Length: 245
Image (tube, rainbow, N blue to C red; front, side):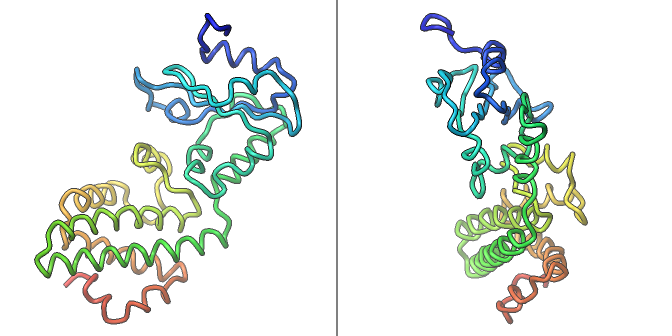
């Protein structure tokens, strides 16, 4: 790992594991998801340093190559990563390579993998309203002869729906790449995974209104049971356009 020796994953792990400033090594991305690697997969590694510790490894911060991408952070920065943010799912399913904190790194990752009750409730309400908004616009645009707008709104609604369903289960939504992987291993309670994925795929591809309405017919009681009926009731008579005819 000199100027003439590019960084490779195994050698870097061996070196970092001997550095006393390093309290954790965490692997995210495809290598943390069994069966998801390809010949193009690199290793995405968090190097977690003790707060205030000095180490020459900081010179590798931001390193990117076809073999290895590095994020070098302090312990406090690692706790804050993805809380909230796009990185949360990646860390929720990350793999621990080194934990010098007697389970402390594992505890931090567990916190990222589970939304608090208040956080889940707050975000679910917002995603439910966004889902209803896009669904309503899609159905209305289809009715009024605007097929492109209807399909675009339908695609938007799927994004919000998935955010909603995972929030209801107090989980960060997986990236699209890992959606099937996640649901195959950790199904959403009360949902048939095959049916849900088939509906999502069909709606995203075609904007089919009957399929959107049938899916909403399953979402509505789920949302109401979770205590979010007031969000739906605010749509008043417009709910009728979203429901099966």
